[in-house]
Each structure stands twice: as C-alpha cells, then as structure tokens.
Amino acid sequence: MSQHEFLDISVDDLPVRGFLHVPGGGGADCLVLTHGAGANAASPLLTAMAEAFCESGLIVLRCDLPFRQARPHGPPPRGSAERDQAGLRAAVASMRRQTPGRMFLGGHSYGGRQASMLVADGAAEVEALLLLSYPLHPPRRADELRTGHFSRLQTPALFVHGSRDPFGSIAEMEAALPLIPARTELLTVTGVGHELATRGNRESLAGNVAQAFLSFAGKR
Image (cartoon, rainbow, N blue to C red; front, side):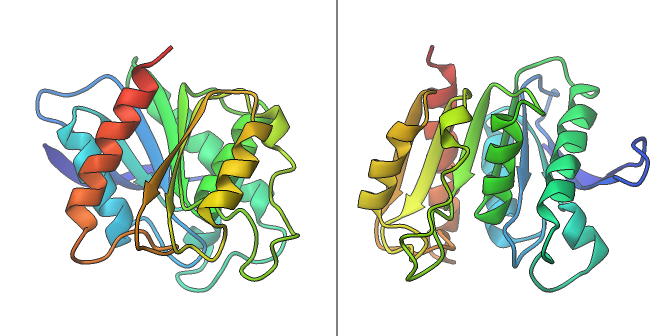
C-alpha cells in the first residue's frame, strides 16, 4: 500500500488536491472521500478511513473541498456549497481517469451532505455513497431538516451515525431515510458523537465501516 500527495489541475479554477492511497498491486474500485466543515483531508477520521478501505483493496482519494483549498481554517463561507459540489464532481472525474472500476463517493458531515446533493441532482454518477455523520439538522433545531434532496437520491447510500450526535438522533435518522427512494442502510456507532472517531476507536471503527460499506455496495 502506498500513499502520496495528489494534485490534478486539468479543470480550470477547480484543482483536485489531497492524498491518494493505492493498494499493493494496484486496484480497480475507487472511493473519493472528503471532510467536514471544520476539518480538511488530513483529518484523523478521513486518514483512518482511507487506510482501512485501501487495505480492503480500494484506491482512495481523500480530498480538500474548494473552500478549504481557499482558506486553511474556518467553516465554509456562505454560498460556497455549489463550488464545493463542483470540486467533488471534478474529483470523481479525475479518479475515473485513473481507474476503470466502480466509483464510490462519500464524506463526513458537510462533505457528505455536499456529496449526496451532487449525486441527487445527477451531476455525478457513482455506484454508492458513504455518508459519515450526515448533518440531518443543526444542533437543537430539529425542525430545520436537511432532507430536501432525499426524494431525488437514486444512488444507494450507507449512513454511519453516532448515537450521541447532536445533528440528528438515531430515531430521527431512521425516520428520514425512507424519504430516499434508493436502497439505504444505517450503521449506528454506540456512544460517540458527531466526530465518530476517538483515539481509542479510530482503527476499529474504520475497519468496521470499510467492511460494512463493501458488503453494502456489493448487494444488488
């Protein structure tokens, strides 16, 4: 297994930047994975996930969204979602030039939400989505659901969610997922919040998620 920095500037004003993990002997299937609003592609969660998926035989690109490429710290500015989705579309296109296999897309929190909106609008074709800590609503504002695009989502999606996540309880997630016409599955991580991974559970969590997602993606 090898890892190296990745940069693709073939799309004007939308560079794809991050880290590419390649399994020993190469690979065919690929996962593009991105970060949440307060993190970047080097976050411990994304790094652990990328390593676990790569050990399972996938090529993995963990990439920085355009807002993070523009500023090293702070949340995405208002109005950045469209450009961040375009950045993910460019990342998927870049990886399709790298490998002939199946393409998967996912992200943590904000990154996962942008991935799901991109795919729901038909702007990128992938075989399945991996949504880590989907931010169903802002904390303590359960009436502000971020599910408007769920009815348009035709791509299978595995949701991984902590039982103490203030952005949505397990019960709220279970109530929202039937809005999606595609096949879905909810993997609950007991005792953790929105960040999912802790220093003590990071490797085991990543391994469990990789195993669950590959099983989910292999179903028809």
